[in-house]
Image 1 (cartoon, rainbow, N blue to C red):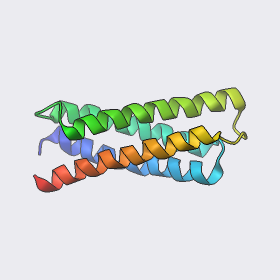
Image 2 (image 1 turned 90 degrees about the vertical axis):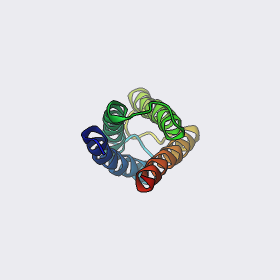
Image 3 (image 1 turned 180 degrees about the horizontal axis):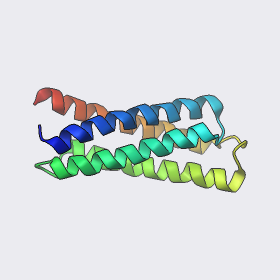
Length: 125
């Protein structure tokens, strides 16, 4: 395994931790609190970094895992932007609307699928 893939794998674990903390806090708090936005944003930054590293180290840019990963990252970007827009427009103490909660569930679930497919690929090789 080359160095970029190794570092990317470590960084994606950090993305998993931050994104999960953001998701759990969002489900629990239900408002645009600092911790929710902080963890989601850190998860996004880590995932973008990990994706860049893995692209640099990959031998094939397009695969099923790549497609799932790119679409889950896109969903994550849309979700984080939506959360920040909501916070800026409505403030930190406003409850998230139902559509935003659903978006979080869908994007987090899709991201976990991407994470697991990557994990399976590593275990197979």
